[in-house]
Length: 199
Ligand SMILES: C[S@@+](CC[C@H](N)C(=O)[O-])C[C@H]1O[C@@H](n2cnc3c(N)ncnc32)[C@H](O)[C@@H]1O
Image 1 (cartoon, helix red, strand yellow):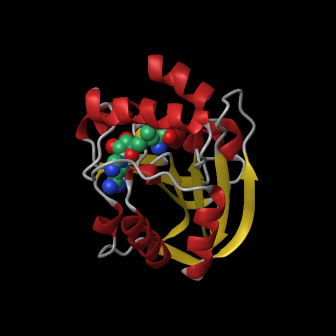
Image 2 (cartoon, protein in one colour; image 1 turned 90 degrees about the vertical axis):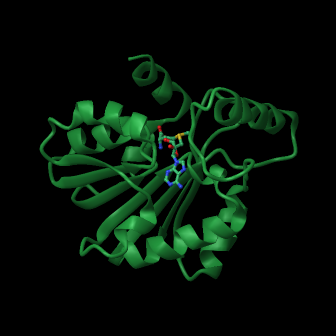
């Protein structure tokens, strides 16, 4: 309940949803409590939405939305889907990649390429990175969430923020075509950016 109220204040889910195709197979990686997956499924019944997350506790929470016919959740990681037949029209990853070291980000994007259909798109939403005071505050806040409270699960050491242009470069080098690159409006001093790329 608390999460449902607070999370959309921190991350503009309503804005992000507009970039997701209104139909097809949609994968929300690191879906957490499943709120964004639920919004996707509710706003278009032509979307078949799958939310995945390695955290069993979070997926247990997310499953309270499973009454929606076009929405399902699973405890797993992206690489677990490789040997399955399903391929996606859109993969979305919101506030997850800062948990991945650079090399792992690259591996993650390579797997996304394999899991996307021919004209499929990948949407990356993150807080970005900067040298200013405000990014130091962000890093402290996220370190507390992952290390102290263990509210956010991660199997990697440390946090690995990368700027919007850093992600753009990385994705371009891996052969993705950049379609959209914007900063999302927010009352926060460190707004989210959104990148839409195609394979
Ligand atoms: C800050 S939360 C974001 C949750 C959700 N995307 C949202 O925007 O509300 C980060 C999520 O990434 C998940 N996560 C951690 N390691 C992961 C991995 N290797 N693959 C996928 N998700 C992961 C965590 O369990 C957590 O739910």
